[in-house]
Length: 330
Ligand SMILES: Nc1nc2c(c(=O)[nH]1)N[C@H]1C(S)=C(S)[C@@H](COP(=O)(O)O)O[C@H]1N2
Ligand SMILES: [Mo]
Image 1 (cartoon, rainbow, N blue to C red):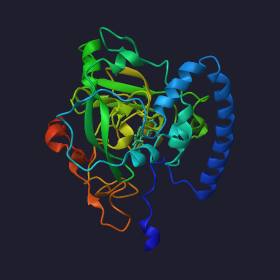
Image 2: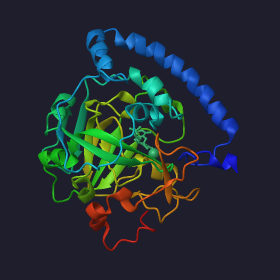
Image 3: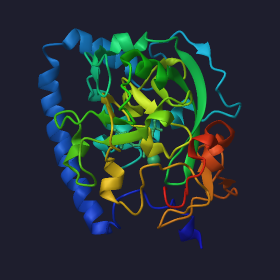
Image 4: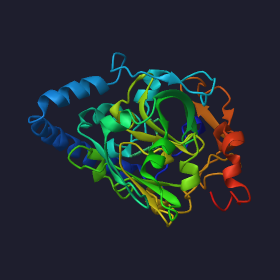
């Protein structure tokens, strides 16, 4: 029985044999070493800026503080420690282990950074990260994040509703979906050598979901600039959907008429649908979604907590899915 207490499988597209995992990791480590060398050379021209920035975004207290107002959309729940939030991560571009992003994302150069907003919009253009940090008042908004792997955290994000950006670019009447593309730079991201999915990492929302106030662009957490491993310099947070919808290190936001393809759906269509709403009633084909382990709070031997419909945000987002069969549109 004790063996069964291990974590549920991670959301890889197919069952991976230990030998494949081992080979993958070995290839990855070799790649990581190569990237370190390249990054050192690349850092030379912009050394000053790069150094200032990586100091500001390195994990641990003392990062650069952000001025925030409290959000009315926060949940009043015990927050996961900053240590757990910044050391237990999924960011496959930096490796598959939970500790890999904290170990390897420090080299990611997040300045300069632009996000292209285009597609079905009247005023599409590039936004610099500086512009994005000041586009709307920064809220400290405490949200639950429920990973598809059946663990969860409660995180005080810093950011604002994605709708502020979407409204600024004026969606055309044809816009029905939003596609989010994240950085894929093999010189900075050793995990791209892994074939677990096609890069870049792409996610999508229906436009009405994206305009819901709870859908957030985050530029910080715990009152400070976002650490690289959490998706610096800007990432999506969609608290009523499984964590993988909350795409990190965004470089492009495109409004579309057609439903975008998403990386996880492409990798394993039967396991990951377009909607990916947190739903305790619809199991993942390989494990239950009925319960979850709250990181840092529930020990392995404590009973797991029940997963809530839409991750506890049902009263706020439920009407977005009125009349839909959520077992089919999973
Ligand atoms: N670009 C990118 N974004 C990503 C991922 C990833 O691998 N790459 N992992 C996702 C998953 S599975 C989860 S659970 C959350 C984790 O966010 P956190 O590490 O800040 O808690 O990021 C999501 N965003
Ligand atoms: Mo996840």
